[in-house]
Amino acid sequence: MSENSKFWVSREGQNYGPYSLGELKTYVEQGHFSEEDSACEANERANWKSVGDFTKEKKRTAKLDESDFYKGSAHTTNEKQVRTSNSSPLNAYLRAALPDEYPVGDVPLSLKMGDAQRKEILFQQGKLLEMAEAQLPTAPCSAFLAALKHDQLFEAFDISSTVFHELQDKEYFSKVEAVSRRLLSNSDPSLDEETKQNLRRLVAIQVYFSDILACQTVVVNALTQGIKAFEPPMTETGCRGCLSIIGVSILIILVSKMTDFEAEGFAYLVLLVGGIIWGMKMSPAWEKVKAFNKLRNKYYLHANRFETDLGWDSRSGASDLVQAAEFLKSLQSERVLLEDRYIEPHL
Image 1 (tube, one colour):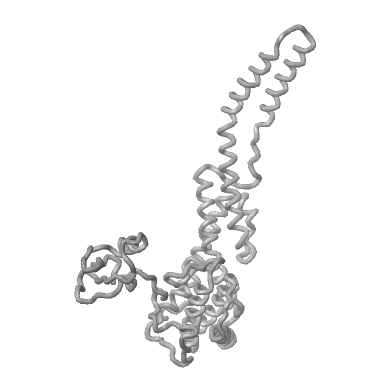
Image 2 (image 1 turned 90 degrees about the vertical axis):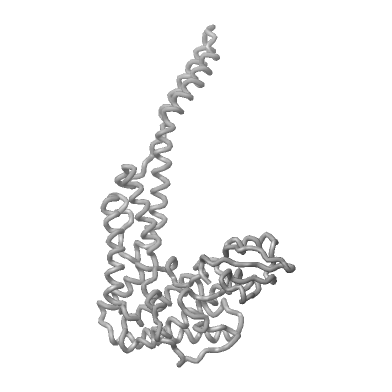
């Protein structure tokens, strides 16, 4: 079934269609069809199935066959049955930025993930680490990297044995963790300290890559608007003009009280006209300050997340956005360089 497939639907002896998959899902959601109605692809009129067979989302990883998944309480997997003929999922995992590029087709990584999502990620990690272990003799760098990313992934998204409720799932979690520890310990002797340090830095860049890109976008937008630095902050408020108008108006009112000169109306007029003129004058300045502060806050929101692990002073970068843009671009180049250097292309 391709994304461009068309479908016929049979309901109460009447055929409808053909519809695209998106249209079919919409009609099911609206109640025009049920998942129990019959349907077939337009080019396979003899192969009728239920509508639900086409519209229901299938839990599977983008590039791993369904047989590659551990099914939790449904069955156990044989540790020795590791498929290595098609190892492209391992390569995708090793090169993936976390969480945006993590290779699970229909399971977005989120701090609010439910049990089913965490279970799906656990099952995929089990298969990926098994693949890495099978490649350990010839690709120790990839094995070491796979274990490092596994630890970061589970730590960042709070995946531990306590989030699983079925005994068999807890046991499988322990098995996956054991494979991860084994990968680290068995690959460590084959790698020198510089290599291990570079691999740790690669993982750090991959973990914070979405923040790096977001930070770069902010910096580029700022430079486009003529903002060269976020430090010192912009604090244009225009209070002096406002206070001057109020002060003059109060003075007019006091003079009118002390004399027979009726000037209260004139004072209110000064307040009104002065306020309008001041507002028109200060509105662009306020908008400029507002835009500046919005960009500045977004910059620090993302930069503060990775400055410690990647050895960067975000405040220093904020003082020179041209330098900051160059550094952020260099991180992207460094990621590509390290991935090409340490991740074996044949995996």
